[in-house]
Length: 78
Image (cartoon, rainbow, N blue to C red):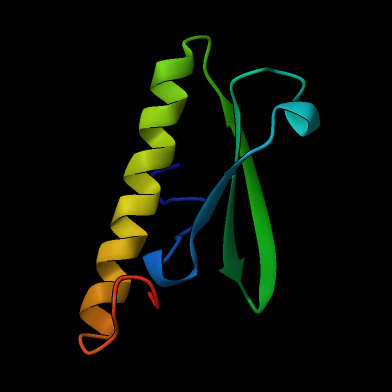
């Protein structure tokens, strides 16, 4: 298919480590909002550093989005 299966807006995106749910020590759960429902994507990688890099990239992008969306808020509040 040439169309994406989902579009995940950064304003509704989050990532958490979930090794127990996935059954892999390097598991990551990505959540996003679709049609007013929370959806999940579970991913893993054999290399722990790779999944930590994914986590950090997602969280950094969300943090930056919130800083731009709320320019008067402190980093702690964001």
